[in-house]
Length: 400
Image (cartoon, rainbow, N blue to C red):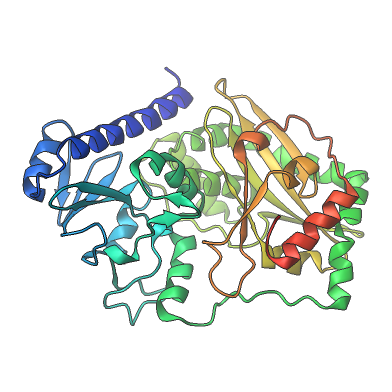
């Protein structure tokens, strides 16, 4: 079995284990005793107790006794949840007649309720209550038959992205990132951005940018293959981005060494929360390119961009934004595609997510991964009429 197949089967085993959990919890409805329920689970599933959390390599779970499903018990501190947020984190509510399971990763928290007055981006404080967990998320019920779909949404964003939203919502403070203000001058530049994109993809500069990125992929292909084996979609994507665009040579060598030696933990590395991962300035164009890895044997719906950041960037006269997709298949073959954000296949499969946006924001966008995976060539297809309509919808803050 090759490494890519191991990842596939690891994910399969993760969901098989969670499905076993779901069945045992359901079969014991009315047990009305969380210690007895834990004992039943441990007969079939390995669970290690770490303070109030039970965990294994696939998921973590916290048990809470309540009279009804609408419960307000304090569940866990945000700082402890951070330790488990990369895998499914489940809350099991043991009620007299029925047991309930809720996916409770940071994406599915409305706010932090208990002892959170000192909470900030740099000071993770406070705990969440049962009432802070979304029961319905983006029109998707937070129930066991939706766990896989919901967790894939969470993986796209992860802890750090959710932390800022939780700080803003908990403390009711003005958002750090404000809604971009559009006036007559910058609106005209924004509306002209599809024409700039069309001009760029037909220019020699497009070929130069594609060749530069392809060289970086070729030089790092071995390490990209190793990084693609990391199960966590958020860490995997950021690491591959850093291998291509990172500038700290010492850190790059440490990361490569860790990948080669298959170390359990990687050195700390930080990717900037910028619009794109790779900036390239030409005389006639200022380009930003977002690097996206597509594992053809796994489904994902990656985050695309913050809409306000995008509009601010597109208000610059020479601005051009692109996606650089890296395909990795089961045979570990790499294919690359440099695609405009206005490619009609991208536009047709871009969706706004408001839950991650925070207040005073137009939201962020997410790509439909199953369709994006079918982009197999670098021939950009830009329809100026469709692109203009798409921009008007972004400026309005929603996609019809």
